[in-house]
Length: 388
Ligand SMILES: [Zn+2]
Image (cartoon, rainbow, N blue to C red; front, side):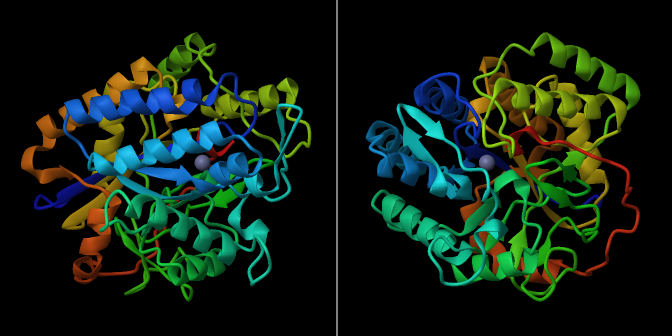
């Protein structure tokens, strides 16, 4: 790491319900954990960004579930009024999901942006992103007239496939900063396939409709990747042991492409996920909500990610999900912020995506090269729980 490096850390949350079955009411799964997160952020005085799953609120509203929609909107307004930021997160399956006899009948044919298709038809990727940006601008503009939705995170971190088309849509709709890429992350599940093993060496770069995500470009959407890191074998063994001990702590289940979201398909996906932790040497995401993670592992992983980069200013994000956070994970978040400040002092600052978007033009001259990383390993598979 360049000794002069300034580290800008962006703490983020994907603000959403489980995509499969939810084992309790939305208050238990989303709103109460978010209240606890906002409390700890207030205690350690750190601004954060929540990526709101707007399709879920539209689905609830359209199906007469107004209490969820009202609570969702009220909490987002509170988030903005207390100095945090809100970005756009889209899980398109909600657009086609119906509420029958008190149960959500989940549609799993169109789960990612590219599956909506590009064009002007109903529920196209363009229409949905534009509707999402306008929805957040209208909802949150009432709270803060300066609010603009300029940040995006893809469902399951999947900007691929068809990344050039997706980037064009995002740019056209006013998105200026993205946080979907996680260097070296590869997913190959029945729900999602992504491969981020070839990305620029720089900590940050611009995505564009011409170059997609692999090549650096001088303008476009500024990418703030989620930090990733690997662990040694012994660390992985301890991680797995702690994971097994916390296995019962779940508020919902993962989604599969199967039309029926049975307990069996969820168990199968969970089993696959854990086997990969054990038998591969995967890339872990910088996140407080991965069961089995400890403060030491997070700090070591964060530092190893910083050491890989030589940029004078590094923007790096941490991904979390309120639905996966219990008291222990909320505490871990507070400890991570305190300890990071202790270790890096004035070199580190915590910002929102809104602040980064405002600085975006100034960051262009910092992007020196667009070299493609050649040291990416091809045999690493990671499974990201939020995607499932
Ligand atoms: Zn999500």
